[in-house]
Image (cartoon, rainbow, N blue to C red):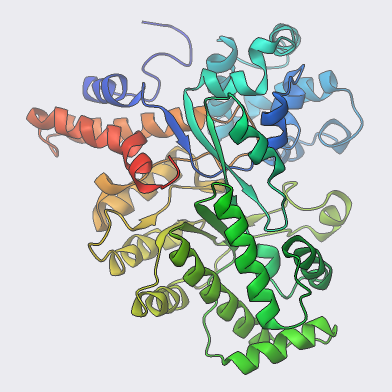
Length: 468
């Protein structure tokens, strides 16, 4: 058995866990149905040259840890050299023990580069140089990084105004990994945004519609949904604090949209009416097109206004929010279901206090028409670590059917993040293997449990989505 930290049986604590992982999960292809990878880099088969470019740049998980350790911003997002930034990250790594970054770091080094040394300030130069030599070759190009992890599908995330030109070119290429997209209309929904009118003008240009009324807006969004659909999209996503649901009339919303287009101030109630209306319209349209809709709920974003002003969004200043979720989410889903217009839906929760809320909510709208029609999505962002995954798996198991779960995704901007699928699979197999060992699951049903593991790792997602 390997003596490396990342051993063959890393996180697997007994023989049953080992059997489940090695025989049923490990070899399953990866369906990464939600991420933020740049499709242009996949199309161009980009070569990254060093670990800082492919591994540290843009990774706000690492940036937060480095800042906490007191490392100057120059070595994080500033003008320090790539090698200087890497050395500062390496210096940080030993201090990340018990943070998932410690596990992810060594999994990624081992899986992509066969580096089994622990990363620290002493080993930094050797690891940087050896991996830079590999990364400079086409063997470690963007597409080959996806091949190394047995990726079958990666689904990026694009705004409605995106031309999808890179996806179009990829669809015509000989790249065997399918690259699709998810429609992300947050900028059209969040009418409270200061630059909302500028965005609506851009959306109008993309749809070739002069957007003056709320009806125009709906026509433009429908046009872009149709465009995305014709380009292979079968999935959408929304990053919202919480689902809005208040009573409204069409005339209310027309008036609210007109006020916004005239740069008038909206009340909180007007904002909620607009968001409710546009979300219902979008969801009914997704149902018409047969898409899967995703809702990422619960983030409190851009808390540090000073640093947000300097560096912009998605740079490490976000946290878990404590919004009230259940009542409005229930009303929203019920409204769609009452019209028989609730499409397949995945709900992701960022606040672990709401895990049981989400696990029970999905059962209200699984109507027997489709296996696992409404899903409690995997632990994401701050919860895509061992404890967060385990709590999500336990809540779903206790209050739903874990056997119908569609499994893990990266939700990442990094091409080196795919070992998170392995991490999840090991956590899953260890959880089940431990219960077999304790007699809570029958040993004689290990083959059936293995089938369940294979389904959660791959088969359920393959059967759930329409673009595979």
